[in-house]
Length: 92
Image 1 (cartoon, rainbow, N blue to C red):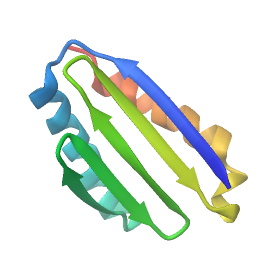
Image 2: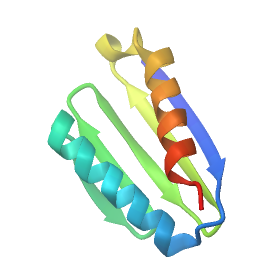
Image 3: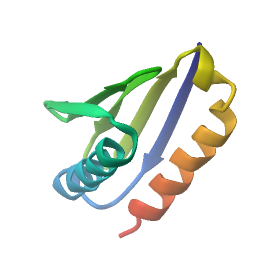
């Protein structure tokens, strides 16, 4: 099992960052059959072979992803994709 952790700072504020996380979760739900729910400022998500969370704060976003055996082989490319998406979407 692989674990991915990525943290990025932002200056969007909590509400705008939550909206970005919600948009991302909706896209993941459509494209990859991901189920998600908010628990306070934490977006928890799950699908077959992977689960994790996105913690949204006033000035940062933390992504934690646990990959099952089959997806672990792709952990490097998955981490790069997460970093790219965060870098693109957290710009003011």
